[in-house]
Image (cartoon, rainbow, N blue to C red):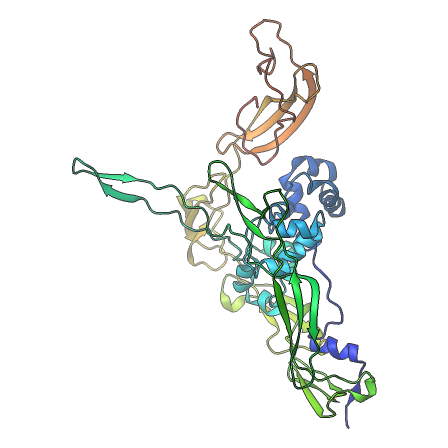
Length: 476
């Protein structure tokens, strides 16, 4: 037959899977952002600067154990702590938690520890959705590497609105308003139970005509909500027996196996027409069980545009002057499709530098952008634009933190030089000094330098100042 190709059965399976010969599991590196990690923790930025490899290694070896957040997408430590089934399955394998979230967690609506909605991001960026579909590992990498810098829309985490107050009557005829106890979040429930393959109790092998099944005993740990003494939800955990042992499901369940024809092992007996982005492919073979000829359809491939071949910049604020990026399709031997152009946004409007021609509507602060209107210096249209954040109003002061460690004979403190914003109180810079034993020369019961009580209780840790946190005072 003209154009036919005979391939091994393993390649046939790969084609049915969409053209990929191997599928690698996702991991921490798929959502890790070196810039985010360094900017969030001043000590790491001081130690490693912008060295991405060193910052990633720090998180894997130390940061995760310290509870640090390495990504604007997922707090993987919080994700682990919230789900006992994952903790039991993965232990300290941080790559496994990220892979679980990107592969299953999004679909299972697991939300604890999630900082960015990847599904919403893909839905609001058509080029991302077209390129990656539901491959959330690739979508995550696109956001970390490009989306943040480009200021793309989407990804916001939507939280449920608080319960409305309840109004009732009083004995004197006047109305009184009371606020009920807040409801426990409806999302904080154990994940839907999924049976896990434990002991294989029996099996019926499927044939070409009749289905079969495997019969398993479930080995999954049963989960329940956990609450503290005040009734506050604190996470999920295993259901325990009276003697403290984890309870397992133990239910017998069946894994249904569909009836299926069996392909020949000999590659010369399997005919394959490859699928393309334009048409379906097919596999033709004679079933080794029933002897009948079978034809299986290979669904046509989805275009994958990840090889940029041309880039045209936007020329002005007008839609007709916007640029585009043009890609080759990797599933079609690098061919160019008609719809492979991703249009760029027009240039943003820019107000004149002449302050007399700019009218400020709302002044900017260091926490909120303001707005102004005037005439665009590019296209001359009358526009309203957002203004940049105002700079912090910084103040530098000496500060002290309790540095008492268990086992020390004397209490001590650490000297700091802290720079913070007088308006929003965000700490912008920290210089750490030396640790000094507290002393009370004037006999007032407090350290003469840091003013902390000499006989204060042990804290067991250094209460240090960190860049990005709120400045609460000169002593903590």
